[in-house]
Amino acid sequence: MSLKDQITEDMKSALKAGQKDRLKVVRLIIAAIQQVEIDTREQLDEAAVLVVLTKMVKQRRDSVEQFVNGKREDLAAIERDEILVLESYLPEQLSAEELTAMVDEVIQATGATGIRDMGKVMGQIKAQASGRADMGAVSASVKERLNAL
Image 1 (spheres, one colour):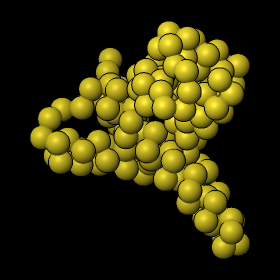
Image 2 (tube, rainbow, N blue to C red):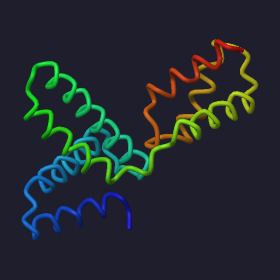
Image 3 (spheres, rainbow, N blue to C red):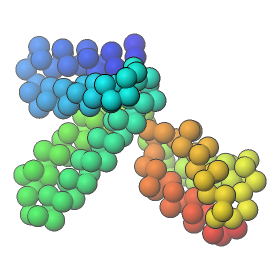
């Protein structure tokens, strides 16, 4: 079963079970996927759906930060709950050790010698770690490793 089909089935299950909060988030996911499909005029594959989900998680993390800074813990809690639902559809995140090993492996494979090769390294890592790691953290790790060369 594809990820899009799983999300649709989860919407039906949440509707039948009366899980209003989960239903709201799942409907937001479906709407975001459909919006991207309309904008691009093509059906999204698994990787593209993961990109949409990752973007939604990032938006909510930013919102949590803003709500906490604005002393609106009630709204931050709602966003955190939404993040949990969104993350349930994402693959397991890479650990720090796995990420470091992947960065080192890609740097060796590409023959990167300095910061000039960051684009080449990031391109390969993005293909391998899409949806499984925060690309901002990956970028910082790659930059640190390449500067050390």
